[in-house]
Image (cartoon, rainbow, N blue to C red; front, side, top):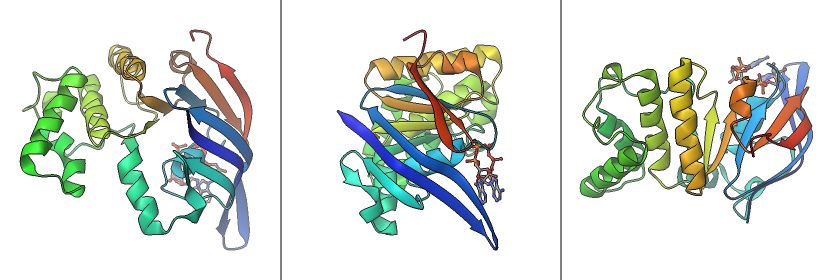
Length: 229
Ligand code: ADP
Ligand code: ADP
């Protein structure tokens, strides 16, 4: 089943008299259940692409269909609703509330979604179990290792049952042991059916996914199966 369809996508940033074309005629299809690495040098358009896929920004021209919905046709409010319902974000710097337990951090997106206290707690506990942190729910971020912090962030991304997880350099702040811990978690979730896109600079991370899409100067220059797939 097709999850993401992108046709002739262009993005131009206009700053006064200067225009930067960050994406040029990008075409891509991603199916439900894929595990994709987005790679390329700094400035190649990865963040721009992920921001559009995550419904944080809009393309200048072209078509983007997410789970059957044509994104161009939506108002900003509808776009925000799609983002909250369909996308789970994971960031390089975790973005956890520091003085707040793992459990409360994971409950946060459900508070925005207006879900009641009892259900929030049950779903947050489930998500923390799912990422292997059932025994750390009352720990605060500074009581957790880097890998554990990122697993809390993954639990938070999962909790509204998104169609896709978008992770921007999720291992960029982690040592090699924690990096492997987080990659093993993504592999497990993908085997359970979760669609995952990760941006990474690191070749050995990209090779742990199933498909590698590489950008250069705003264009896709490589789209291939990973050697491990
Ligand atoms: P990457 O994530 O691969 O480093 P980006 O998508 O951040 O690439 O950037 C692609 C190009 O678009 C770069 O030339 C960058 O300087 C430019 N760019 C990104 N964001 C903006 C912006 N908000 N305004 C102007 N130019 C931008
Ligand atoms: P990354 O670490 O993902 O490559 P960047 O350092 O390229 O990110 O960009 C960080 C932020 O700055 C992004 O939100 C991007 O939109 C913005 N940005 C990048 N390049 C420019 C630019 N030339 N002008 C204005 N904003 C930019």
